[in-house]
Image (cartoon, rainbow over all chains, first blue to last red; front, side, top):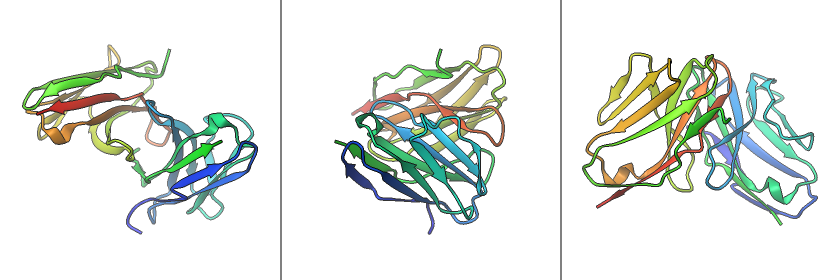
Length: 112
Length: 110
């Protein structure tokens, strides 16, 4: 497609459940980023891929969070044992270089 | 100290006025600088990159002061459609994570 596609757009889950969020970047973009944004805050960096490998995962808050990009295109962010504090909008972005990011519309996660 | 700091506002400015925002960054090794715009409940979108010599795009002017480690955004002849949150963004080099500020909320009043 023409832009970055994220699914689901909204996800409501219960505390303790497992969640997967998917990102389909712009075709040909080698770099893919995950951020999360809470109300009233700027996007907070989670992880960045160059191709299939995680170039920087320093923003993942703890080992409940994991992300993959097995074929260098689609990426999945996985959250285990969700907590209420994980509620946020999870933003994916892709880039062809020079740090110019194109964001998807985000996946709004609510943990009850 | 946060890596990127912005005044969250809100700034309420009459239509046609000029408004300026500043942003400071803590890492002197930062190399790339940007302003992104985010409308309510939408994703951030690139507004403009910020170059060392300063740059202008229509009514928008961005400047970088490396010595004092701040960047600025000036909006002239503000329009109602300029109402948004403006995010200051900094990166250490061409292929590293971008760090976002909390954003400055701007509302243009008719």
